Amino acid sequence: MSPSALHRIPLLVLLLLSTAAIADEAGDKAKDQADLAQADSLRAQAARGREAIAAERPGREAECARRFLVNRCLDQVREEMIQREEAALKQEVEAGRLERGVQARGVAAREAQRKAEEPQRDAERAAAAEEHHTEETHRQGQIQTHRKEVEQRQRTTPSATAIDRADQARREAARTAERQRQAEDAAKRAEQARKDYEHYEEKKRQRDEKAAKAAQPAQAPAASAAH
Image (cartoon, rainbow, N blue to C red; front, side, top):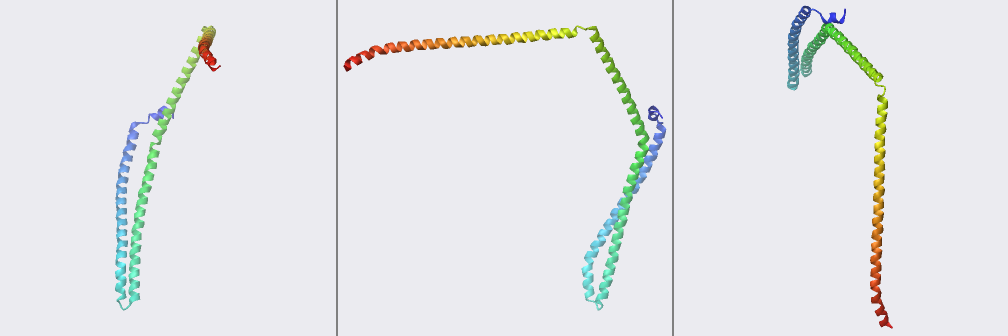
């Protein structure tokens, strides 16, 4: 069966199957609720029975101590308590059986639902696969068309590579010229700095010479006075 045929399962059949499944599910839910309620009741009865046993045992055994046949009385009390413990245990076992039945029906219901929905899921997967195949075919067609357009442009514009090279050469020449200009500017700044430094040193030397000449006349009289 083709994917499109699977995808067109008659709606009436699906509707009938869904209606039957809903009815069965409602019946199962009602039974599950009843069984869980009964299980809770049995567990509660068992718990109350055990509490009663624990509460009554000391008093019953103390009462036996006042009897003439103490051991016989104690044996009877123990036997009764054992029977009541067994009854509580049976109630718990029955509660567990009911709960496991609910769990088993739940698992079976989910499995049945999965199987009932499997044809629809198969149809959806087939439709999705067909759609993906269509999209992939369309995408590959677009890729081929684009590739052909690129090849066509390359054939019709053979000088495009040469234009790119020329443009790259112009950009490289501009960068080289800019680097040369920057180097020349740096050399000019260094030359100006050297001249400024020499001018400063010359001015400093002249100031030092003037200061030395100004100091000589003051030293001469001091030397005559010493003689």
